[in-house]
Image 1: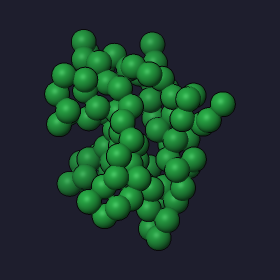
Image 2 (image 1 turned 135 degrees about the vertical axis):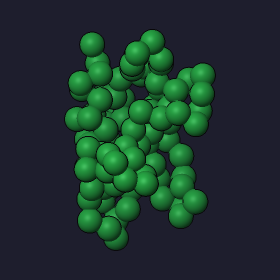
Image 3 (image 1 turned 180 degrees about the horizontal axis):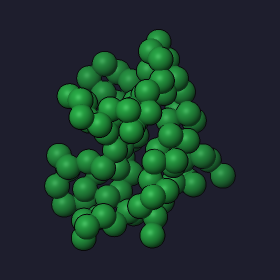
Image 4 (image 1 turned 180 degrees about the vertical axis):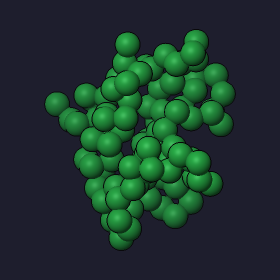
Length: 91
């Protein structure tokens, strides 16, 4: 099994459904995000793969410009960070 397959396929938060998305950023970096299925501008959290930057947890970005957007050195590290963050929403 690939690590990405361990992530929840849907997370329900306050009556809204979020699903994982993987895409390339404007800086050509991979990013994993949980996006609202009805409003693609609404996201629960994201983690970008930025091998040249120090990792930053999602929780550490709350209150800043790129709120709920963390970064990690590898895709597997990004998946781990997302998995850890979304555990609180699994129920």
